[in-house]
Length: 312
Image (cartoon, rainbow, N blue to C red):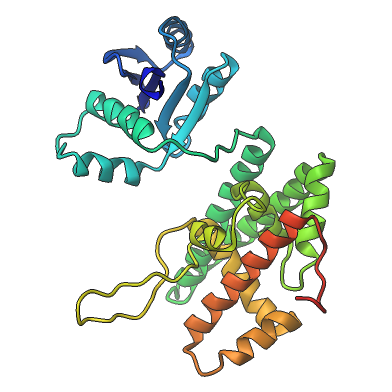
C-alpha cells in the first residue's frame, strides 16, 4: 500500500523547479515564479501527489513551500548532505537538477519521517531576524579584528563608526525580537519558562523558540544529538579514539555555548555538575554543561514546568 502513495521530489534553483513524481516516474521543469508555481500545484494535485520533499536551500525553498502548503500538499524539507550521501550510496555520482529531484523523491520514500514539524510563520520571522542579528555580530567581530592592526586615524574612525552602527542595529533587532515574541501568548510563556533557568537569557530563549521547534518532544539523547552536543564513538579495531561531538544545528550550539559559560558560574546545578568534572579538559567540561543545560530545558518544556533549583 505504501508503494502506491505518490510523492514528489523537487530540486530548487533560483529560476526553475525540477520535479520528479515517484513511483510513476513522471518529471517536469517549471519556472520558479507565480505562474510556474500555479502550474506545478495543478499538475501535482492532478497526479494525486500527497507529499512533496525538497532540500533546505538557504531560503530559496520558502516560497515554493508556502504555495504548496496553501494548496493542501504536505511539504517535507530535507538535509541536503543526507540526500547527497544517499545518492552516493546508490552509486549515483552524476549531479544534475533532474537527477537531484529524483534522488530527493527516492530518499523521501526510503526514509519516511515519523515526526514532522509543520511550518510556523511566527518562528520563521524570528529566525529571519536572528539571521540578520548573527551577521551583524559577525561584522562587529570583523571590525574589532581590523582595529587591532589599523594605524591610520581616518580608517580607524571609519571602522569605529561602522562598529557603532552595527551595535545600534543589534539593539534594534533585540527590541524587535522581543516585540515579535510578545505578540503571541504561547511564545511569551515559553520564553519565560526558558529564561527561568539561570544562565538562559533572551538570545538563547528566542533562538530555541525559532530554530528548535522540536524542543519538548524529544528524548534527552535525541535533543543532544540534534543540537550537536552528544558525544559519539570514533573507534575501530585496536584504535580507541576519544568520543567527540559531531554535526547538529550550529546556530543553536553557538548560543548554547555562551549560556553554558554563564550557567557554569551562576547556575548552582550546572556549577556543581561542572565542579564534578574538574579533572576533565576545559572544552570537554563546557560541552558537558551545554548538554546538561539543553536536556534540562527539553524536560522543562516537555513537562510544562518552571526551573526548580532544588530538584535540578
